[in-house]
Image (tube, rainbow, N blue to C red; front, side):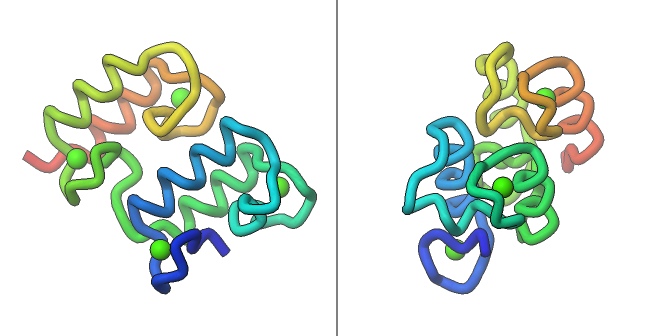
Length: 106
Ligand SMILES: [Ca+2]
Ligand SMILES: [Ca+2]
Ligand SMILES: [Ca+2]
Ligand SMILES: [Ca+2]
């Protein structure tokens, strides 16, 4: 589950696809995102995806490190959910910033 591009990993590319499915609602192509098999892509599936995810949750740019670029990404995405909603509470807020700072690798 969660390997959208079928290359046997759950990396940033898969995460982008997951977030798109989470935002866009359930579609046949999103079956790989429905970890618990209840035909929706919700916070429970997001938690399961994170458990399988190989990267850093706060690495929203997908470059392998958590840096100022990710911080800028979260700051520019504040408000709605999306890839910057790293704690999956349905919004991009200071809580996501706190998680990013906790994973920060200078
Ligand atoms: Ca993959
Ligand atoms: Ca589900
Ligand atoms: Ca990054
Ligand atoms: Ca959040």
